[in-house]
Structure formats: C-alpha cells, structure tokens
Image (tube, rainbow, N blue to C red; front, side):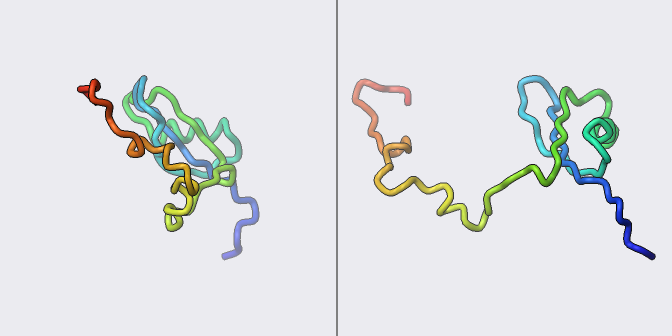
Length: 97
C-alpha cells in the first residue's frame, strides 16, 4: 500500500451546547476546507439539535503551553505577589468575602 500524498488538514472542533455556556473541545476531523469541516463537525459532534454553535480551527494554528512546565509558566514574576488574591488581608468591616 502506498502512502497517500494528498492528506486533508486536521481541524479541531469546539461545540457550544447551549447559550451561555463556553465552547468545549469535542474532537478532531480531517477536511479540505473550513466549510466542509463545519458540515462534518455538525454531523459528527452534534445530535438532536443540541448544538448552538460550532468552531473549527486548523490544528496547526493552535499554540499551547507545556503541562510539564506549568510551574514556571504560571508562577508570578519575582516580587509581584500582589497579583494574587491571597496577598491581601480581609478588612474588619467586610463580612461576606
């Protein structure tokens, strides 16, 4: 069997199931263009009119951080602890915080 040279690009699919909710990653699919990716995503990842909105994004357009280096990526810079709520103390007059 020979290797296929014309492989369609991979698309990541995000579905919003109802108004007010965020889009959630539903899966991936191959399609030649965005229009076909949307149609295929609708058929694959939504049922019984449960979807409100679908996003398709080329996989190679997504950049992500490395989960193994989360400490260095998410830590506050040296001397900038004031960016976190735990830096502050609650005032005496504030009851419901």
